[in-house]
Amino acid sequence: MKKEWVWLIVLSISIALIIPWSVLRWQKEKVMSEDVQIRVLMPNGEVKKFPLEDYLLGVVAAEMPAEFEVEALKAQAIAARTYAARRLSLGNLQEGGYDVDTTVQTQAWFSEAQMRNNWGWLNYWRYRGKIQKAVTETYGKVLVTNGEYIEAYYHSSSGRKPTERSEEVWSSPRPYLLNVSSGEENLQRYIKSVSFTPQEIYKKLGIVRPASSFTLGDFMILERTAVGRAKNVRVLGNVYPATQLRKLLGLSSTDIEWVVQPEHITITTYGNGHAVGMSQWGANDLAKGNKKVEEILDHYYPGTKLMLLGHKQ
Image (cartoon, rainbow, N blue to C red; front, side, top):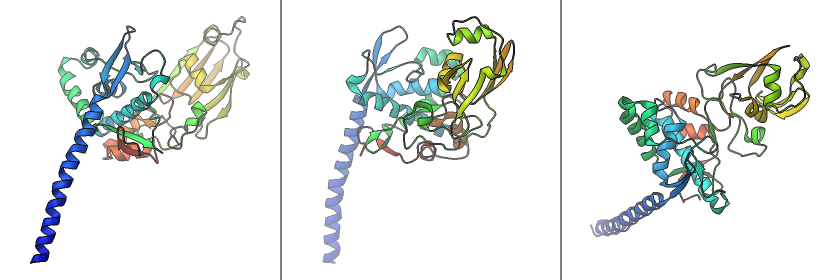
């Protein structure tokens, strides 16, 4: 009987110590996350400060369709938070006095007015509440590896091929940005064809000599990535990284095919985006298959860990 009383006393003391410590730690982490401010360059050139979690609501609204599954929206919230946290960690290295803008150059972002215009009044409250749920239920969560916030890149659709390794697109390898299956059920979701005349191609590529009719030898893929997307391309005698050509011609992806005729070239692209990191459509398809947010993120960013903002170890 005496032994049981001793154990009861020890248990009571432990509870008395652990519960207050846990509450204080939770409060500290919550206050810390709420105190984080991010500087956003607005379209009018003004720089505004937002609490990080408020900013994320606008990012998820702009970057992922609100119709998507909640688990996919959660994955987007964590990826966006991680991207923002990494930008914030650069501190004074940011130029222009801001951390992010509202475009795809950093992360797209919607104001409340843009949300209403995009969704309409009938859907505004429903979609906003759904996205708020995704942000709130992942509060403060970020992806880290080796004590650093990861570069949590994402894109719309990988198309018919797996995702790309970062070094195939930006030359710098990351151990968590690898070739993984897209997770997408519809591999033909994004197929887009666009045609250019010789005059249009010469102008877009900044070639100053007079335009002449195309020949088959004017267009050639010189090198492909491990999964088969174009990596280096020769066009009209000049060699371009496929990522640069994509930007110059306004193409949807670097998974390209073309049909060349003397007076025009028709370029067909598969997928939408740079194909590095998380496929947003793939994340939604995985969520439809009952994958939870942790499983989705582990699929696209293998070897990373989920931690609370500010706790990277």
